[in-house]
Amino acid sequence: MKILITGICGFVGSTLAKAWLEAEPELTIYGLDNFIRPGSEVNRIPLQKKGIKLLHGDIRVASDFDAVPAVDWVIDAAANPSVLAGVDGQISSRQLIEHNIQGTVNILEYCKRYGAGFILLSTSRVYSIKPLADLAVKTVGSAFRLSLDQPLPYGLSEAGISEVFTTLPPISLYGSTKLASEILALEYGETFDFPVWINRCGVLAGAGQFGRADQGIFAYWINAWLRRRPLTYIGFDGKGHQVRDCLHPRDLLPLLMRQTSSGAVAPIRLINLGGGLSHAISIAELSSWCTDRFGKRSVAGNPEMRRFDVPWMVMDASKAQDIWGWEPQTSIHEILDEIATHAEKHPNWLELSGFI
Image 1 (cartoon, rainbow, N blue to C red):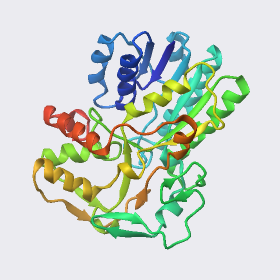
Image 2 (image 1 turned 90 degrees about the horizontal axis):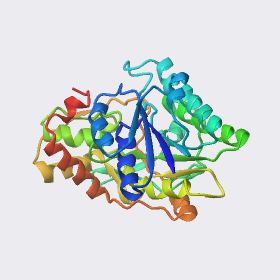
Image 3 (image 1 turned 90 degrees about the vertical axis):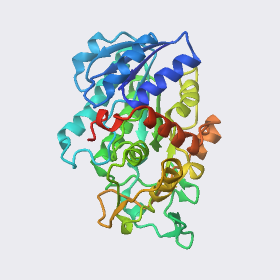
Image 4 (image 1 turned 120 degrees about the vertical axis):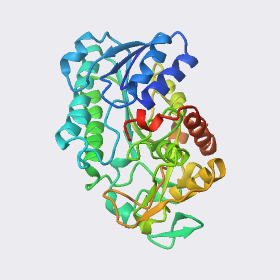
């Protein structure tokens, strides 16, 4: 089987490529990357040494796909991954749309040409912000917990957000581009008869993730804690009680292998993938973990709310378990320990990531 991974030199793409080759050495993997993200160059040589065929190209440029040979499946891991993209002054709203929508269209046209299957790694940020921001939460220890003394929105339970939770705007410019990409992918697959799977991922984290607060909060926080860089709890009274769950990208692999197997079928084409309650942690709890690992330090507090932030966001991946028999394999403590060990071995990782 031949696979193309777009954004292969990013954290998720490179992690999947290496894990997949380890599981299936006979696999042929092509990778497409434009290397514009700080840090992505460090993954080029290690991937090439494993026999992965890297192509320098930009998914926004249709002609860059002319040099890509036919494959059986495309895994799209190339989109801009920040919920603040288009509004934070780092890239423009037009650039965001070019990356996440026009890029998707170019990939889908490639799939149409060769009849290749398509898997979109989408995001939990397609879910509506307002009902999540308005949730009643209670503080337990140093973390928010969902209050069950309230009528919960449809699609939300104690287990987290399910696939039927509303996706009505506002969902951020970033979330809207990913939702549009999902719709386009499903329509292309149906119209031109090639298989499409949509995997909505929660926060992905692990060693080698580029440490930026807007894209890899766990890697950023641990690296910054170790290096004694300034840290601030933002919003929610400046106490760091907001909660997210995390997932290691290599835990996606068993599902991707099933989805790309010959004749794979499922009653739905779209599922959530996240760590769930067992992998949920607040920023303050993460600080306690860092204190135990590296020693105590102070964290500033800024109560001013930031756009798109929500107090509690956990992915309910029970449908993935029911349909595909999938569940996370790497515990949250293993993920944090892996990031910390990597941080200790790479003292300049924040600089390499372009954050400092």
